Each structure stands twice: as structure tokens, then as C-alpha cells.
Amino acid sequence: MYNIKNIILVFSQSRSGHHAIIDWLYNQFDDIRLFFNYNDPKAFDPLFENRVQYYLNDKKYYKVISNSWIDDGITDLKVKEFLLEAYENIKIIQVLDKNLLILNYENIEIEDVSKISDEITKYFQTSKVYKVFVVRDILNLLASKIKSGKDFTIKDLRKNDVKIKNTIDTWLKYNKYFIDNKDYITIIYNEWFKDANYRSKILDIFRIKDKDLSLPKLATFGKGSSFDGYNINKESNSMDVLERWKKYKNEKNFIDICYNKDVEYYTKSIFGNNLYK
Image (cartoon, rainbow, N blue to C red; front, side, top):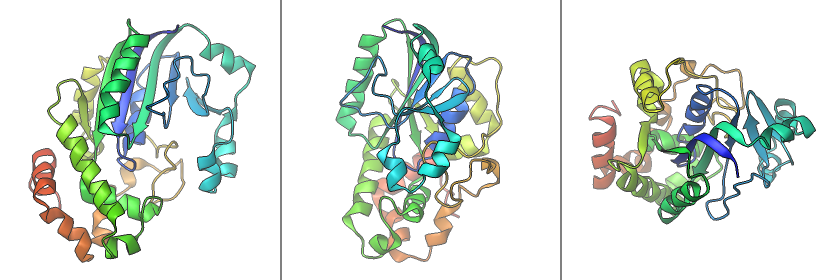
């Protein structure tokens, strides 16, 4: 079994900006480092034999072409960005001692969260395990989902489709479970994006001494930004990620979301009273 010094489990909804945060955290640690995206909460793979795409140290590899690349029409772009794994990097994966492992879990059921944590702790008893929850405000989250078109579209918003309601319900469930839960580190994407002091405090939790507080370039896992397209060289600090919601502010069903009492409560308690001004 591997001896991994630091393990970071990241829980979030898709389009929460968490891939940028993962990239940023990943680059704060020394080698040997591994990051696996889109992990199945019901099929933990402690030897990483079922890997598809991953980060290994400062490079990105793929073992097979994933269905998501094919479905999204980005295979040609991705095979230029990722290297096909070879014997040399497989040997590095098989090295027993590692400094960092990051596992990303998106849109999973709440009841699976503690199961994952327990399973990781069981397999890696000597590791320092950090459990991270990334939250983004609901209107910018929905705006990014609408623009990407993967989960739902503007037409779904206008007819108040159940998929919109389900996303809001999941956002509320996540906040009710994670916020103020002492077992988890909550990273508020909005604050992380705009405040270097906030980023510094986060790194204190991970005991990082040589801090890089700069924002990363647009994350390359997660298909980039729905608003800016696939552009791995786009500077993230030049993107209006906190104002995505304004594109849909004249859509009645969109703004009415804020009048849901539970949404209003968590929006104000997490993001303050003046978020959507």
C-alpha cells in the first residue's frame, strides 16, 4: 500500500470553480504529487489501477480517451495537452512514498461523503487527510451551468425545469451539511478569487510555508470556463467570474431564486448582504 503524506479530498458541485482551487493547491506541494479527477464515490481504487486522466508531478497524462472528451468534442485539444502515459511515469506512480494525493468528488450524494472519508482513512492510516468543501454563490453557479449547457439551458430556466430546482436543492443540502462542520475545510470560491489574504489563510491550514498567492491560469481539468471557452492560457484574474449572474439578471425565474428563504439565508451567511448589487 502507498505511503502518502498528504491527502486532500475535494467535494463540490460542478461549475463551483473548484478546479482552479485544486490546481492552485496542487502546485503548493512538492513531488511526488498525484491528482485524479471525477472519482466514483462507490468504487474507491487505492492502487489507482483504473486511472483515466491525471496529474503526476508537473505533467498531465491520460491512459485512455475518456467518454467525456468524446461527448464534449474536445478530444483533439486534450490529446495535445495531456501525454499518453508511458512506462516511465507508471514507474513513478508505483513508487510507494508520495507527498500529495488530491481526489475530486463532484455532485455526489451527501450520504457518500462520510463513506469516502472513512474509506480513505482506512486505507491510508498514516496520512494527513484534509477534507475540503468548495462553495460558490448560487446565481453565479447557475449562470455558469446555463452557459455551459451541459446540465441545463436558458430554455430550462425559462420553463422552471426541475433540473434547476434539483441544482438549488443540492446547493442547499451541501451548505447545510458542510458549513460549520468542523471536520471539513470550507473554501468560499468568491473570497478565494478576490482576496490574497484569504488564500494565505487557507494555505496556513495546509501548513504551506513557501506560499504562492497568485491566481492560477484557467484550470484545465473541468473543461475550462463556460463563459470564456476552452483556453488554458486565459488569466483567471482577468475573468469576471463573480459577475456571471448579470447575464441572466433580467430573467424572472433566475432572480426569483434569491427569494427562496433557505437560499437567502445561506447566501447572506456565507457571502454577505451585498453580493448581488
